Image 1 (cartoon, helix red, strand yellow):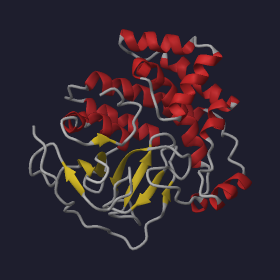
Image 2 (spheres, rainbow, N blue to C red):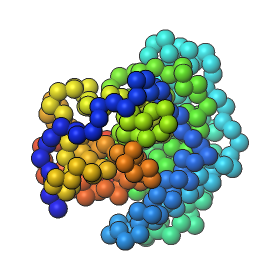
Image 3 (cartoon, rainbow, N blue to C red):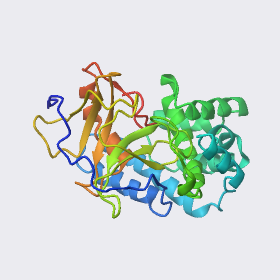
Image 4 (spheres, one colour):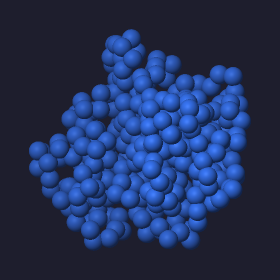
Length: 306
């Protein structure tokens, strides 16, 4: 495999005159569809054991979203204050310390016991389940800060997966029309970092590009040629695993201004793509980009450490 040279995106710059700013997470499908995608990607992949493990993690997320009672919605006055001040209405720090979130974490950890997993992952889960309040608060804080310690990535994976449930539940209850842009690379719902961006083929937003939050799964509209790390629209190029593969559905969008890169997925070419599952499954692109001067800007707790 090789990396194609940096070149302009050959796709059409925009397919619709005005795409919705926000696409909220669809709780009825989000985690279930993601689990199915992980399972499909595992077939014939050298990453099959890990992809199947993540499929199990995501199935638990789907089960809990369906089983849990609806969370207390974000108060309307907080949403309006956030709108006026260009801030995300979901306070992730407050969310992480809430009784609702702690209950979600405990239920997730309990269900994760039944997953088939390697010994190291089983040991990490056991330590998370028996962690005292100080340790659990520390791990939650690391997840909120999008800063996971290398020496305990397996532990933090469980915490991050559980917090994704609560964050998505809160984001799904927001009025998307009340959300406003915050700043480059920041989710307008919870302030999280994007996993990657995706060019979608949904009716009413065909050809539009959306960044996808790594925490609450909210998607927000961004222009097609723009660095989601620094906001530059200059020096943007695209690299793919296969040389000359203009039809690649996962590419690295690189920025010569800040020397960062982030994946861009073309769901308009393959509707089955999932921003998290396909981020993990396209690990080969990450490994190839390691040999370049560009630093990964996308955040995915399921792909840390590579």
